[in-house]
Length: 314
Figure 1 (cartoon, rainbow, N blue to C red):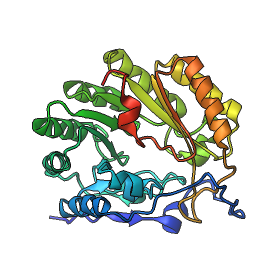
Figure 2 (cartoon, one colour):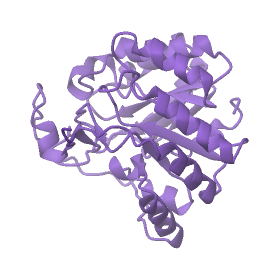
Figure 3 (cartoon, rainbow, N blue to C red):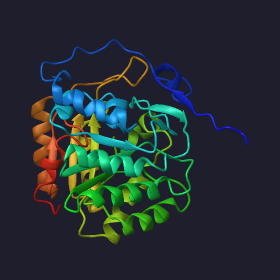
């Protein structure tokens, strides 16, 4: 029997084979409002050890999230299932790309037990893209939700899903998730349609909007959510247009945050958006009818997700 070997590429190796080459630029000076909490607390190390002992991944670590110190220190984390190797190679993301191993059948049980040990009341589950799987990983999401709720029936679960792109995959994925629905369904558009070929190769703007709309149509009482990065070369006007598209597709919740370049081999930061601009965009989003908006330089899709979810049906 032939042994399956995974291939894992990061940094320069990951972005070298992109059809659109990344042009290196002089780094913009980071403004004073870009602040990170250093990961140095007993709670941080406890969470980190528990995840390592149970062979679990978090997007906090794999994507080099700047808020990892604050979140771990508060005993929270965004769990990343289906391995740590993505089948896509988005040049804004620090998660490794390549050929992944088959999903760990024991991961849902380990995840459920770990979350119970952390005594969490709200949890975010995300994953790498798994274009190699027939259902895009939806059945694994479903099993994880089931195992988490075995230990805490009252826990609120937000899932941040990939786009399940491919013939029939949206229908397959959503039918599976209907059996174990989350409390919040999140899928990030990430950027404006003009920048998709550059920032999200393999994804399609209209497809991601359709995924959000179709889920809402099937489960209208469950809030849907999406997020955008600013600083990749878009304008505030283009961000406003995307927000309008999201509302037209019945998306309830929104996150807006500053893109930060993880390595010199990733897309450069084209601009640092001021806190004033983030506040202005938040007001515009609220006018459009979003029930909850988190907008600021250090905001990420699952940053303080429990606080953002309060009052929207969880």
